[in-house]
Image (cartoon, rainbow, N blue to C red):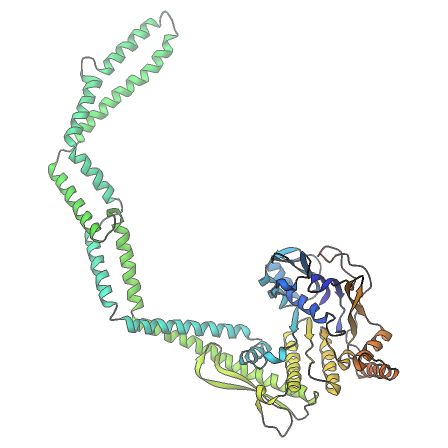
Length: 588
């Protein structure tokens, strides 16, 4: 449940903290006092996008925070653990900031978070209904989404939409293949010819480099023989061969070392050099024996080089890139064969269509059941909302062609009294009736959602009198299963609440201060009297307010009174460890 909403430098509010209890709470006050601003702030904490105009003029940064009690909410605990955002205890803290440069940041339990994460966790905590929710119900998509949400099969609806997209993509590939079969015939033949040519040539990855080395060696074999012979002669065969001269030097130094042992170190250095020269001469002789002076082999290598070079030039690639060209050509042939295989693509399209139809049929079945249940609940609620004998029906109208959302369109139909025939909601219901039906739908939907906190922003617009009283009773009954927060201008609704909070503005020192007061018995009667009588409040108006409050208490004991908010000064509005308690601040 929502325990605390803290606001700093948001729209016209400089500093404001709202502490909430269980049960049914209402926010009342003059128009423009800032009641809906509080709910706008809550919406931002639940993932809505900040707009720069929402930063209080002259401020460097807006800061919002909300504290929720998630005791017993295993789904929230599991989500936090999976996202590595869990904290000790049963308190969940959401926080957001926006600076004057447009930079926005978010935190969950003190750890950085994304807007998507705020939205994910928000969907498990709060169901927020705006002032114009009844208008959105006129859209076919909204009507369908509400039925799906009520039935709890939005995942199936998403899977059906995904299957429809896959089917359409497969059908488009099939149709494109049929149309392109003749056009791709010449391309396929060209690729096949190139593949045959490259396969016949059979160039390996390292062959071109190996051929280049072999050609150079064979073409210069005579010169290589002469160089090897000259090297062998200089090392060992000539009268002044290096090995003989070095051996003589080593022997002379070794003899002299008898008189000075220091020369032995020099001898030790020279001896490995002599051995290396002998080994080099041996390698040169072996090289001369292996060197091939084969003109025929040279001709074969050069012929192979020419063949590879000609094919590479034909296809405008380097000779060493021919193996890669062959692999790419074969892959293109395979892809082209699959793309133009209309029969295979037709089978895939048929399989995709079958998957969609199975999911769509299951979705239709579930929608039929959910629609029957929902229309019964709404019809029952209409009887208490000044539409005695009215009926609500949810029709599943078959579509002429398949669609991503299934085989049918959802259409809300209503008759506001017994003699009126059922007709489309958008055409039959008046503004007031639409508001009441919208409320009945929202109440039914949120009951199915089982969320701990329900927020209504003037959803009682367009009603009054006894109907408004019944709206208040419904909201109070709904609070028996959790927490309900409602912004209202109707005293009939406010009188049914467990807690009434008054939002007001006061000018002090040239600045406007916004204050939220938790109303006691006397103050509550005074506020209800203001809502009843406007600026002029008489004793008769106060008596009427007193009777209204007493009547509400006789109608039903508050379901979850909970502890009222406490007075105090804010300590932790920035999201620290201390809990904010003050409920008043300054706007300007």
